[in-house]
Length: 484
Image (cartoon, rainbow, N blue to C red; front, side):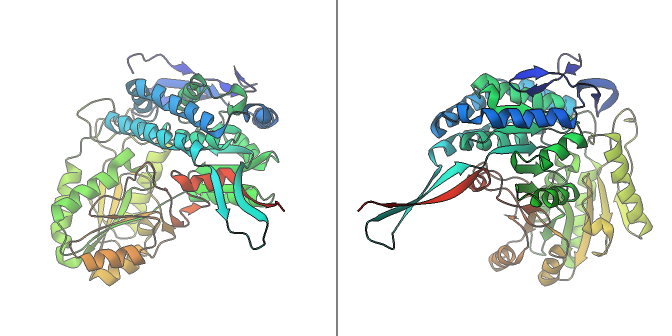
């Protein structure tokens, strides 16, 4: 950001911007904790309830817009965001901390997903099916489920709100967005863009805050569905609470994603894939590579090259062009990552590089890229999500053992394999327990028209992104018309 003046954000409730009754969230630059980035209302449950009730009661009015018309509004929002790409990217880096190249890529992804979601307005039909009886015309049609609570995380503070808001609005659902307290300015900018594009003020609310807001969004009887992205622990709690009143949930949660490297792999390609997969957003991404499962025959060669590349990563403030990896999101996250590594050391694991905050960056929330070798697959560091720039190397004897280890955790989000063997590629695709599978490429990424999500404890409900998300925001009706 050119200007370092702190941003004061507001709630958007009942069609107007307003402050909270009391309380304030203060967000500091994770690369420099002395620099205030934004303030936001620390809202109450009462404010969240007003937001829910406001968009719910006003829904019949703006739903007179047809689905294609709503799609055109989302497309206008994408175009507005495109004209402000650099401004928004700089804001992401200042508030969230990721390096500027990653921030620009995030904005591009948001635009692409919004473009695709805009077209959903012309794809919201059902099916015409054969009738079992003469003189009856039978078909299915979709309708919005009602008010949805969109609870978004801090690691993609622009893209994830966009890929929730866009399909929700196109499908005709009233929206209440609760962003992470770590990224209030990014969320506010996105809501401003949707409003500028023509989303009716009564169709959307923005409520900043902490657990009191989240609990109200989950428990309020007018909320028909909750779309949540965050930790598995929080997501399962949301699902349990929502289930008591049969509200729908769409949950994207944790990952412990493996990259399998077989003996016939291109080792240099595998190393570069793991660098990309492990360090994007400083390892704070649910699809990041956190386990490298390597056949023993090439484990020494792979590990030596991987450690050398990790040691060469330049860590620092994300706005600097020469920096490869930025800070963690806050001091608590950095401390939690350090605690994982310390416990791994206590369990006998061997830290080959990193394992501590880098020198000279004490003003921020930095942690060095870390490689831990020869990990027992049963250890915590091999099974639980660290959410930081930490990769464990697990050595195996063969492909069969690699598959067994890869599938041995509770998560099943993303997985990757590096090999030239086409038979093993297809065996991996068939047998790996993951919702997104990559071959000779990192565990990250995906296309803006493909569903995003995993298996086991990583996801629940209809996928986000792509047409499958329509199944969350709409309900299906069957219609039988006797015309004789």
